[in-house]
Image (cartoon, rainbow, N blue to C red; front, side, top):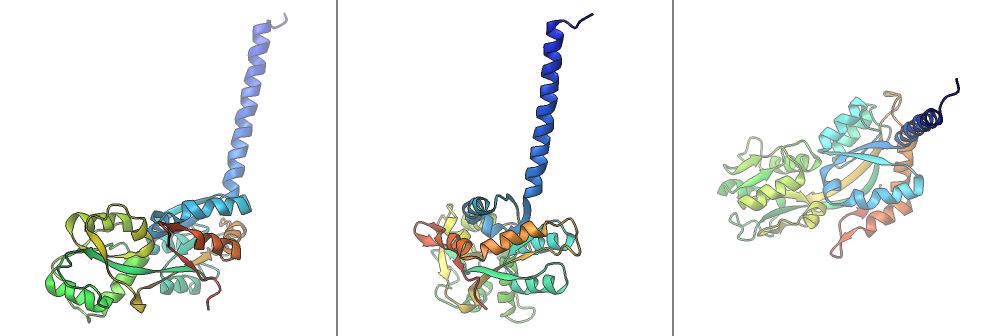
Length: 279
C-alpha cells in the first residue's frame, strides 16, 4: 500500500526539521569553537570598555570573546586552573608571578589609567590634596568610613599596598569595612554611607550613582594603574585555545587595538591610555 500524501508530507517535514536541528547544532559548535574565554577584571567590564572594544576585535578576527569579569586575583586563579584562554588584568606583580610559574606564556602591557581616592564632598577626614598614604593615615585616625573591595582584585591589592605605608600592624580605623564585591557595588556602598573608597578612574567616570562623592586624592605616582594581557599556557592545559587567544593579544597591542582603546571616552574624557610599546 502506498503511503498517503499526508504521511509523505509529514515524513518530509520531519526529515527537514531533523536536518535543520543538526545544522543548527553544528553551527553552534563551530561558533563556540571560534570563541575564546577571557578572564578579566570588573573595572574593565564595568567601565564599559569591553562592550566598546570587543565588537571591533570581532570585526577584525571573526572571533567571539566571552568575558568572565571578576577580581584580578580570581581571574589569575582561573588561568591557573585552565578555565580561561586569555587573562586581561591589572596587578603586575601577580601577573609576572603567574608567568614565572608557567601558567601563562608571556605578559604584554596594554594600557593604563590611575587609581583615585573617592570620598564625600564634606571630606570629614580632610584628605583632599594629600598623597595616598597620608590620606589613609587621616582616614584611620579619624575613624572615617572606608569601603574596601576585599576581593583580591587588582584594586584591592593596590589598596593593601597603600595601607602598608602606614606601618606594619597599623590600624585602618573603626570605619574600615570590606564588602567582598566589585568596583561598582563598592562605589554604591560608599555613596550610600558617605564613606571613602579607592577606585580606578575608568569605573568612576562611568559610575552614575555618585551622590555627593568626588575625587579627593589623585596624581600621586603610586596611583598608577597598569593593565596587562597574557595567553594561558597550552602546555599545561591542552584544551586552551592558544592560537585564537594569541590573535586577541596581537590585535589589542597592535596599532588598531590601541587606537580603539584610546578612542573610548565618556563625556569627552579618555578612560584608558594605550601603552603596549612601553618597556
